[in-house]
Length: 337
Image 1 (cartoon, rainbow, N blue to C red):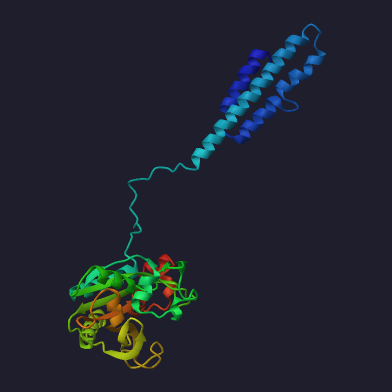
Image 2 (tube, rainbow, N blue to C red):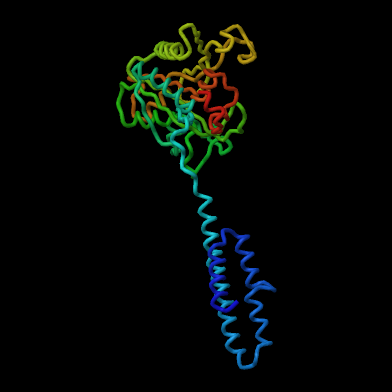
């Protein structure tokens, strides 16, 4: 085969190689130990001395051409393979459609919206505040003594000596009272943080809703009425409510609020420990020291406050036994609501 015919054969075979295997066979055909181009190079020593320079030049030219064309073809094959990874055949528009996965509101957002609608219907307005809070608003203005255990680092996430992640939404009440004069009736809702050991009933991050009503002549009877109306709208008109004496630094007197067990309807079960009652929220009359901290005269104004966990309400309403599920992002759980 003369040089021109060999070059034409090389170009054709490399150009028509349709894959790595075919390209490798072409390389062997021309550059392998018994390849056609390799054979030309070996024949140089047997050629007459005066023809060896010309034969050597032609052979080396064909060798370099073959190597160059093989490298170019290899790059083309690699690019084609890379592109095929991202290419998808067009959808057939004539095929029947399948149900897509639609988004939905998170169960906690659903419960919060229900709580908000009830409170707004009772005349409350929504207030908000920062999640990164000053220790003054989180503790001092709410009448927490310096030695109170919740001020310790083992209970609270401190950012600096006087700044922390709020442990409750009560600081919103203080900030709101500093900027507004009575009468006022607000709910403060949002995320709160506590340095808790995480288990099915405790989380380091959860959600609260707190209520505050301040005016002249607000009494404990007003607190009981609003709490009963709220609970019966949320859990049903037959739900019974009871108040038990308790202690909170920012209220005096203070009370825990229990409601009829949602599982056994007051008959007694393992959920309520056979008592027929479940604890729902804390409440009480605003402590005079809290009023003094915001510039209210406790001789003129009185008020009540209450707070409950949104996560706890959701667990009670839907029979959820593990608070960690709310922030787990498990679609099997979230799709149930």
